[in-house]
Length: 130
Image (cartoon, rainbow, N blue to C red):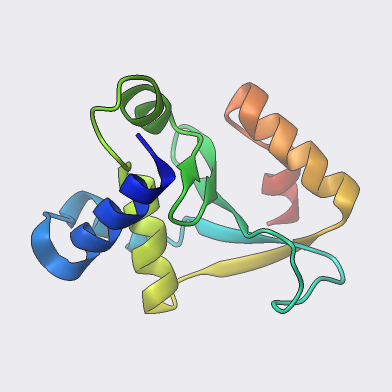
């Protein structure tokens, strides 16, 4: 797996050469949240960090690059069996279709949210802010 392969494969899937029904089902639920640092704007160099709020777990995403779900970590990173997961596809569909939400977090809150999701696969801090 490489970053280039992930991006090329995602673009190919989004252009219509793959079944996206599973990824599309996540769009109706408004589960993708852009995590913005307080005071940042779209023109600065702050990386885009997103959260997927699932029914059983939360995941962190970096568009076209990374998802913290087990499927991506195991199948894509460890085994190289796939270049992306349904969450990365769903995020791109949400971004392109304007079906997103945003939340502003202080740097301390952002750090807590990221740590909670990576450690527990759930962020109480993020749930409270929503």
